Length: 477
Ligand code: 5AD
Ligand code: SF4
Image (cartoon, rainbow, N blue to C red; front, side, top):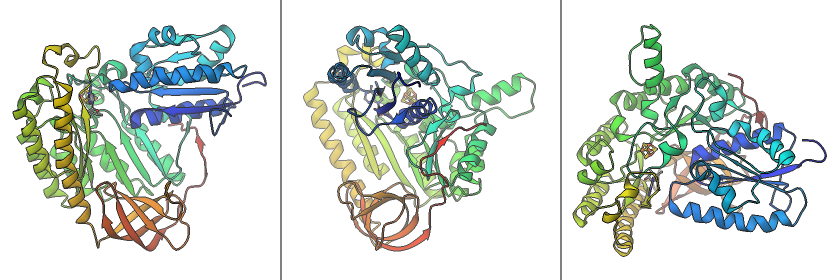
């Protein structure tokens, strides 16, 4: 941007990894446009908020933050505010009417237009641009296919699919992220090759419903007369991405239990780089509630698949999401959730209190909303169950030697190094000398706590190989 325009930016991200990855794109686009990253709001000319709307408190937080940002903007000539992400996609014009000092409001389908919209707002005043649908043939759609300022140089997110075609009754995602579109298979593998050539060793494949990846591509190919089998291609994608030279760890999030097929579990088990970790969202253990949620599986079927996964991968770590207080959830329903959770023996659980999202089916079920005091009590009971299994799982790792990828010094204690095991567990350990982020090392686990492990350094397996420290990569695939 020219001398009169903004020179620095800061992006604040709320919500999921999809948003984190969009933020990397927004940063990449702004840097390509000549802006530099600021360390704080004080030092920034542009603040970008990349918002989330999956639960209610996110809304309240956004409008609170925008109130503070008005003071920030008024304090210095030329400061700009951009609001993007799921909440602006949902609220559309509401953002500008509640906070008219915002310069750009954009949605989830036009992240690639960030810099144009900023230029337009600087010239002509505040602008809101929300697109209702992604444009199918546009490669710019997939966050990974744009310039990105990746937060770390040794691991990377790779979008394989955007949107979601499911209709989970509580979920606002299909409304704000649109219908499911898979990214072409070869583009994904090429991007992973490109990342590996830059020294990235760990990739996380991102999608709302990864098991159905490629179903749309197969159907389209068949319509065009190609002799390909119908159905999803996720298992093959795992195998192909997992065999890219230099890639040591492959992760993915999130699968849907109703679509989890044996071929995916087999691909996980047979591809050494695919990590022994499955995020497997349960949501509820009660068949009645699962049916009201339109989840398409029962508690029994969920547990059966999980048992098969563990049979193929005995050292599999399993994490989950559970919603407490879905409309109409009875004490019996909730007890069933406790039972299924106990039997599933999770390594870690994200527990959420049901939050009605306007526009979803569950939001219309107000006659059946659960008393908040009952929900709070259930939440605590569930927490006790899932913490117990997490702690036991972590204690069971004491004495084992684990492979760790180093993330860097611990935030709380810079003398301690943190990293992640293949099971995605956070490990704090003391190394005899500083280890660079991206180093592979081993540590002996000395203590398992409910949410992390502690360990004793054993040896370095390999030094990081990434070539650029802070890459601004334009991926042309
Ligand atoms: N209320 C509470 N939790 C929700 N989630 C999604 N929508 C809602 C909602 N309306 C949870 C689900 C999902 C996770 C990302 O967020 O458990 O898996
Ligand atoms: Fe939401 Fe269900 Fe789609 Fe996940 S699968 S994004 S919970 S609608």
